[in-house]
Length: 128
Image 1 (cartoon, rainbow, N blue to C red):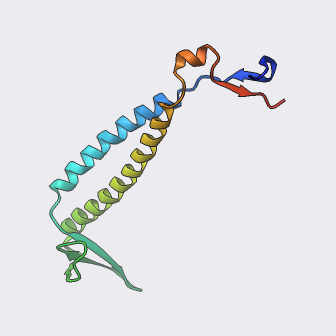
Image 2 (cartoon, rainbow, N blue to C red; image 1 turned 90 degrees about the vertical axis):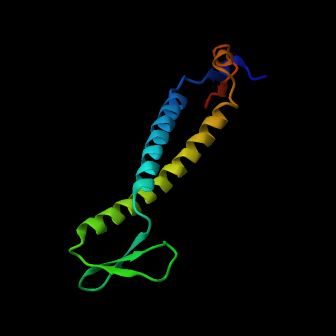
Image 3 (spheres, rainbow, N blue to C red; image 1 turned 180 degrees about the horizontal axis):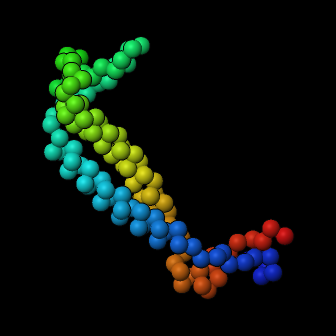
């Protein structure tokens, strides 16, 4: 058992409360993005950069090799598919953050309860 003079209680933190709030916020954002992606037309856009210009191609399926050139004047189609591609990328980032927050919160459940922390069970050795 450590001697009382070389240990101290850790200061309280709102980290876990903030993580739970962020998880709720991200989960709501993810649900909204999934709804938008579901509303978007099927297919995907591929962007090709040449030395002088940018070209857009439509694929019925992301993995399909056959594609159709989209004319620059068809800005509505280009914007629709660019928005969908952007939303899909954001969705992957949100999924990763949700996994990280879930892991953090799962680990926080393994810590002693606040009651035990108040009684001095969560101690840290002093640097001295």
